[in-house]
Length: 115
Image (cartoon, rainbow, N blue to C red):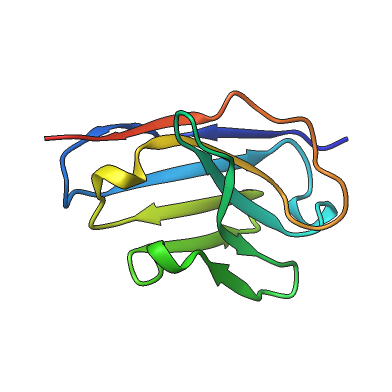
């Protein structure tokens, strides 16, 4: 089974940017679409952005226009470019499948937006 590993989180100030990486241990297209999820303390996990194998992209309304999901198939990696970060974007970010069954969840990468 392909495994996914997240990286790239950190502490930034409001308005700054971060790029998260989701690296697959094998062929990224063997996964039925990849999504970036996040979970803030005390809140349910939510799907932030997704890219289907056919290239269709969807975003959570609150990140539309600020976040961009990109797939680099040559590197079996999906990126989440996050611009104009807000305090409410603070969460642990995970990547996983968006179609069919979830893969094992990784440890995620912490994103903290604070002045």
